Length: 476
Ligand SMILES: Cc1cc2nc3c(=O)[nH]c(=O)nc-3n(C[C@H](O)[C@H](O)[C@H](O)COP(=O)(O)OP(=O)(O)OC[C@H]3O[C@@H](n4cnc5c(N)ncnc54)[C@H](O)[C@@H]3O)c2cc1C
Ligand code: SF4
Ligand code: SF4
View (cartoon, rainbow, N blue to C red):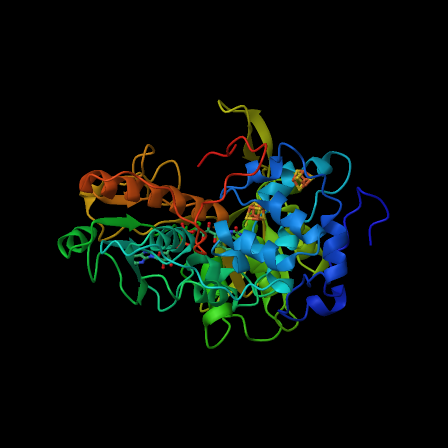
């Protein structure tokens, strides 16, 4: 327990010894008393920077206040009011709110994300969303990841009929690759269970570009189409040997661990090298490290301080026995019928380039071979737009996911919108923005005024923004 206002009420964790051998969730729930104690640290700032930093403008100050007063049921309602994927987010969100919490200046920020989990677990969160009067107008969503699901919720609550088309046999998008030590697996079903009374239909195993196109959906009578296909095609390293058995993409490994009948790395005693330095690389490394007697090394081309992965992830990897080799660039993968090694070269910062950053220069004579039987490539993702019409003129340069024009996310085909996001909550924010634009587009066509999303639990008035709240500070 904290001994001052600046100490966080400790979040219970799986013991270090046990966590590296299993996929059980690392973070455990707060008790009621712990949650109240943590919530009572909150200053209830007049200008809530925490709310302002949240891409979906979750009223976290509000639910923290309710928890501090032991009103967990009310805190659950307030949480779900703006956040239909709260069971997922309370365990996976990168908690942008906590970075801006004023308590962080002198101590540890309020555990805003973990208090969201307390609100849902200790309050009554078995609630069903309510739709306003049916509009008898249908919208199609392509992609059942966070962006598509958020848009479906926004439109469903407004009374639209929504069909979500998803190519995989399951919903969730990249959420399905998040390791079970972060997200045990039933959270998305819990969230989607609350959609039951909305007119939202899910059609899995349906791929745009193969089974239908955005234009065919418009011809079928949908008034608008939202393309939310994300970016989950793994990028290749582009070095010799990448086709050898034993080379996998991080997404392939993580998806197989969560959904596959057999984990790809099931054999005992694998010697694994993961190439990359982001969160996905760390997810793959920490998952591989949980396999029996595995030996796992992350190879990253820059220094530790430059790793894009979150600090918690890197620390977690270190605790769980993952080793790191910094300032190494991969040259080739070697082996004949199976990977036997990864050849790397040391790189050092050289002259500063036009962007003001030093170029990485190979150190002569520094080639070395890391013996391994498995290489996991985690150097980013790109999107698969094969089969989508070129007339959409999708932008793929600013972000890896396809998107339309920034003003309203509409593409060059009227009525077809497209966007995505860099994390679950940013993708949800993108889904909200697209749903708002779609609603405004249909309202314009039908000659009716645009109305804000009604309260999703049927309250007569939409709740006002938090007092002192000055509008979101983030940008998509
Ligand atoms: C390993 C990993 C771990 C991550 N961990 C976190 C985390 O802890 N916290 C966090 O906030 N974010 C995390 N992220 C990022 C986050 O998951 C993504 O930013 C988010 O899922 C993007 O949402 P989206 O809806 O835009 O796209 P996606 O999640 O990619 O969803 C797009 C959906 O569209 C479907 N689709 C694609 N093409 C078609 C087609 N032609 N027809 C029909 N359907 C199609 C896909 O199958 C997919 O279901 C992680 C990502 C990865 C890969
Ligand atoms: S959704 Fe994420 S950023 Fe928003 S309040 Fe919750 S933890 Fe913070
Ligand atoms: S910024 Fe921090 S202290 Fe202030 S209201 Fe938000 S959570 Fe509470």
